[in-house]
Image (cartoon, rainbow, N blue to C red; front, side, top):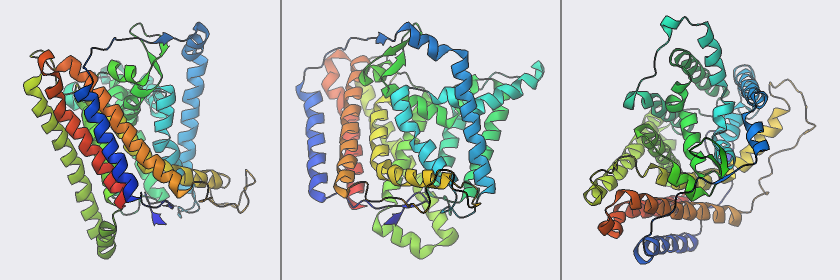
Length: 434
């Protein structure tokens, strides 16, 4: 077992080399077949099938929204109370598991199933709205526009990934408490001054959940109605800005670094260095991986531009093509971690403050590391990366139909296709070697 994310550990085995190679080759062949052999065709846009009126009314009911917001506030209060005043030992404090697993990893299935639900639950929105009512009109401002408006979301995500992947003690309940408290205070003040639109572009986790929600079967049509739709339709309907693009690349780069940091050679180097030197090295490595990912995406766009229509905006056109890849990487990296450490969060929830309670009758129960077979974990890891790659290629193909000139459709797709293939190969290689 090896430590991961500062809490608990992972008991899965490296992916067998033969499985990794076959899966990677299969993904590459499918991708090339999709864009080179199949005839490109314009896809019909569909708003989806509207949900029944009863479901529409329930979703829009003020009582339902108030209940969701109250649940978010209660969860935030419990997390902070446990992280600040519970046991300092992460093995006895559930706050790190709640934050890294139940919240961070949990955003993926919740957003994929129910859309941008976090927007309704987000407790910081409620805190900011309450403070805003107390502010005089003169203190209120319009939120920053352009790239400046998205910078806080990107910076906040970088700070979170540093805490999780490169900080000296990410599993410390006090480190979690400090980050969550600082994040909540900063966005409460900013949200009170700039209004609710601040969170649409500047809240890291809302922007991230909104990107994931593009794959959800539940969305809204142009009239604002809740509809059932296919994931490709959700990706086609999504429109990104520079901030969402940057944040998606940051998350993808952080997940790549997560896989890289588990390589035996890297763990050996950081283990020998230890202390501040190891923290500086991991911080620099995280920054380099994120920067390289941005450069690779920028160069793919640069090679696509010569084939683009004069009026087409290429810069953020392919952002939602990164979402399936981002989800695939995240599922591959966090699947076993979530299953095992999610159990720890539940077991420790019976005694959140280390006072000897047993609220749920768990007694001396421990995390069951046999609940997942290593072969199942390996299959999920490879399958998630491959399916994410295929989803990314299909989405990029759809966007190319809008962006690339009609006579250059096949050639104009190759730069983004190559990037997707690199993502897949890199992801499988890191999983296999780590």
